[in-house]
Amino acid sequence: MLELCGITKKFPAQSRPAVSNLCFSVRPGEIAAILGENGAGKTTALRIISTILRPDSGTCRVMGFDAVKEPGKARRETGILLGGDTGLYDRLTARENISYFADLHGIPRDMQKRKINKIAQLLGMQDYIDRRCAAFSKGMKQKTAFARALIHDPSVILLDEPATGLDVSSSLIVRDFIMHCRKEGKAILFSSHNIDEVKKLADRIIIIHNGRQEENTSQNQLYVKYAKYAKQENDLESVFLAITGQEKS
Image (cartoon, rainbow, N blue to C red):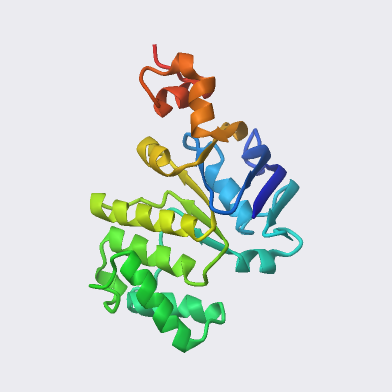
């Protein structure tokens, strides 16, 4: 459903590529996590997949569509939630924000109502779905942006720090919703700094360091391969620090 091969991107002001020779794929019903320190290239990779950025070299295919040569078709199959400003229209309600993007995707109005009500229930948004976004907390805005990104039922879901700004209960709701999408056979790729979040969600972990892909394997295989660095069972933090050359003494 998602395949990257040899993806490289360098920005003029940088001495090294933001990402270099990324090669990985995400299968139907699989959750893959990109793990890396700040500046490792996680967001650049997601922006290339979502067609926001063009790679300097390599290929990226979303549901068989080339993200460079067929960006419109690739975008129709992709739902993306990037970190930072959610970009909601504050004068509109959560429902109106979501409906606006549903209009852009050509979803009929009668179908929109059913889809928005369903996603609002799954994300626990019923109490504020018809309130204006201006007074929303950061977590409420994040869930609204999440719903907006997925209203067109994309096959591939890209999430950049999906739990940013969420309290514990909201994080659990979002986590359950991601698992729901997985059961529907969607391919999910997310980035996170939260080791616990990665451990609970990811079937497979892609570790990027200084723009280079250092690992791409299942959690279990990762723990077996780097067992000597672990200080306890399933010690992803120690494994990550060892792979990136930051192991603790």
